[in-house]
Length: 319
Image (cartoon, rainbow, N blue to C red; front, side):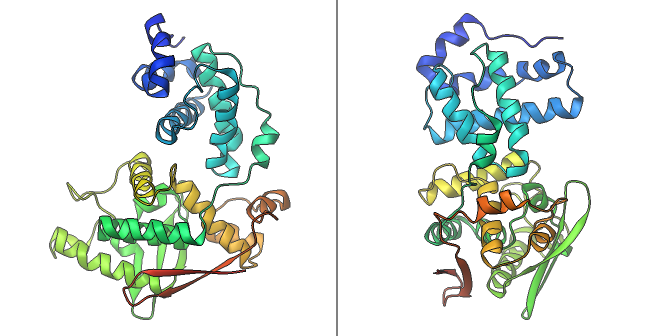
């Protein structure tokens, strides 16, 4: 089985339209390419998801407009994009990018996987975190609570989507969330008091949005239109990206938020095992990976949270 190749007309549009010209053409045809190469079904799905991920990233950040037409720009993009993902998934992300370019017939990607592994995960500074929270608060109570939770405990997108009302234990004394990993395993993570207050505020707003009866159960974070569960990780990625744009931060992703939390935990001198447990990892980071999160060029900073009079979180850097 072989995927449908791009037509001459498709290729002709790339220099003018850039990555956006490819979006429709690869939505389904590329699915067949990994199958034709004999990959397992799970690998086919992963490759398709990650290849579409780099395409959406190219369109959103607009920093590699010639990535689909120029070999140097192609390799720059192939090196930059994996750094926006988690360290553990970078090799498979690069493999998916290689498959995409092979399918396109645009030449082999000349990027060493070891170079991808050494790239430091992008994180947010204290000022950028405050801007993200301000932007989220200006959008809705849901988005504010969503971003506060993300910057406090660093969940995966699927863990945010799976949260139900009963998975958030909130009170004036403190709060915690029950996160469910993709494999079904669960863990409780403690919230700061400031985050708990924000989530209590969202719980009240959610009850007003849904009505008291419906608000007693169901997903903690709902869509603002149909008031149901957010069904796809891509939907959350879109919300995060929009908030990033509002905060003048291009290319903001859930993985950048997660990396920011992980960097803070290491800066607070938690052990690799403690960080793995809090982040829901099945593995303990190697010393090389930990070094990426505490890069010598970026001072290890502990972020202290306190509630300002407005209820907004205050991020102060302590070097």
